[in-house]
Length: 589
Image (cartoon, one colour):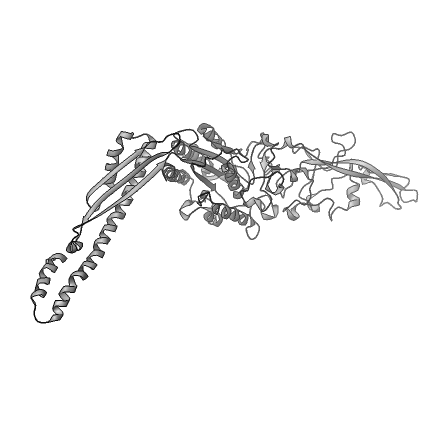
């Protein structure tokens, strides 16, 4: 059956109704039919126009982005813009309904006070099917598009897992290739910069702690509370650090510890540390307090704490205060086989003339010099472990706690460590230096993603602790964080939260990180837009596989910015994909 157009149908039927004399109703229907069809037809024709306009807008926007990319990369010049705009638009806009389509372009190059700008406009018309009945044979439409670049700068912080498990399955090598290899992320992003400072990158290697560099020991943003204190119950450190004296060591027993005494700290006696022979973190373990004539005589020095995976930084110095004379009978009163200089006995054991003289000592804690710090910092005191608040010298909770970290018999931040936790690299556009830093990374201790994320944010804060450059109020900044980890969180500043192998019940480390992620995602800039764009990557090559990290998944700015990888080879392709996405973000807005 041959199809009949609506117009031809109307032309044929309407005269028939006009000639029909069989009833007034036919005349009334004929008269009403024309406006009814006009209203119905108008809706159809307007729908066709809207579809053509929507398609045209998408093509125009894509053409504008492609032009701005070509201009920013130098593949075309200003004189090429009109022809290139027409070619891009015609290739992208393929509407069958649109006729007499034209496109116009205006390009303004950047100056010292204004960015580069492309303005595109396009117009066309459709031939109506119904509206022509009422005198509108065509309907015109048009769209506009603008893209601006050159005032959009990019600052990217890389929080990269440097824990021991990164040594397996070639993950560290793959990460280094993905970031610092030929064509890697650094090359991708550096290619977007037309002038120095258009793109900055920071690198934040993390394990349980981060390494901010020992040369920063005089900075006012450091918290030396834990460093200066003896083994006491520190804020938020709970039962894993013993107060001195404690229930295992009475005040009287503590007062009698002096030169030659047995070390009062043993792991089986309520402690996670023993004694060392001197105040430095490399001093040898000892079972007795150095005697008179020995180096460090009388100094009571706590050693490595296996719960907090760190060293204490100082010793108690002793000074004799008094002699207590005790009259003893029987053989129970004796002086530690004569080794303890705080005790001496005379007379015949078991007689009333048997006398023990016991020395008592006052003790003064003397902390090591700050300059002996190796550069590790731990999580900030809660609640600021989960915020990006800038440090204020008058509020210790905003400062960053120094830590003499040691794990697996290695002081990871020490310059002499065979496997050193690499130092944070602040925002930089020295591409070769950034590559060298990434390629020098080595796998170290346990996993604390939150501290890597916290310092990635700190690296982006203008004029902050890591010296990020100031921001121009007239410039748009894309602040991006990429967080990669190959394992689940196992430890942080608080020993009761995790032991380096697993978290405590309830995943308290993840809970702190989730709060940090939520705070960052809810941070807005002056225009009400999200301050940070967060990408998260879980490299899951374990066998059996780790579960999906909910905290990483939820930390990403959107579901498409979380990547679950099951092989090391995917690290390179994932960073390439992120780099491509950031390139589009950098070129235009």
